[in-house]
Image (cartoon, rainbow, N blue to C red; front, side):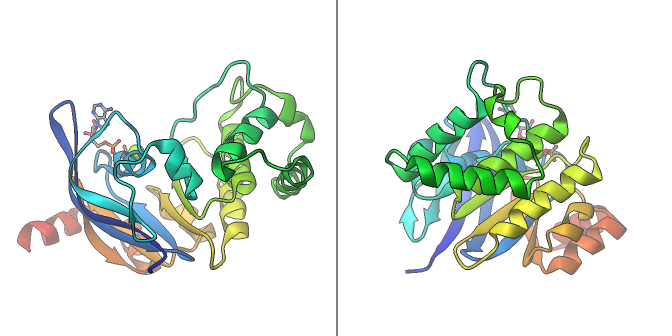
Length: 250
Ligand SMILES: Nc1ncnc2c1ncn2[C@@H]1O[C@H](COP(=O)(O)OP(=O)(O)OP(=O)(O)O)[C@@H](O)[C@H]1O
Ligand SMILES: [Mg+2]
């Protein structure tokens, strides 16, 4: 059985409007892929649909995780299978402290109560890697967090939950170079045969720190081109117009 996340001819709509128009994409376990494309191409929608966001309707196609069709599974069931989505705009959860949130999320992920010693060991290691202070653990989730702190918190979740497939939707905008480095450090520390990530980003800049194995480009609801890291450099240099023409001419 192939260990991979696979999107097959995925068509998705929202309130009657078709957003994804036949997405095909394969992310083998152990690889880090970047997903690029202009505003409104459908990148975030794809990420949310992979995670099981009920606001979108799958009209056609399927999502396979390690060969199993997960298209109809609830988000928590997907999380248990090792899928993780970090949101482009992180939510505030008033009244829930960071540590408690992480413990609950880890319970979801494992399908059982995490061992406390193990949980705290993971937390400590992650906090150190992020150059953070343990006092953050008693703060309320994302409440009053700066953009950079929200980003750190997202990566903290990644490090504690240790998913097998992570979808990271990165705004880039508003993130300073240190925040980008935090994302990169987190992702790079997870890299290995049992981890893969789909990093959604606009800018080549992040990909200087997280060097992807493969780059996909989405336009108008489809993946229109797939290549190596050099594709991101080419897009940075030339923009998207040439690719639009290439797609139109095909
Ligand atoms: N919940 C929603 N309600 C209405 N329209 C939506 C919704 N989600 C997505 N869309 C529409 O689908 C299209 C794709 O949006 P999406 O957010 O997936 O693009 P994106 O590639 O992530 O763009 P960006 O680079 O700006 O983040 C847009 O036209 C958007 O307005
Ligand atoms: Mg987006």
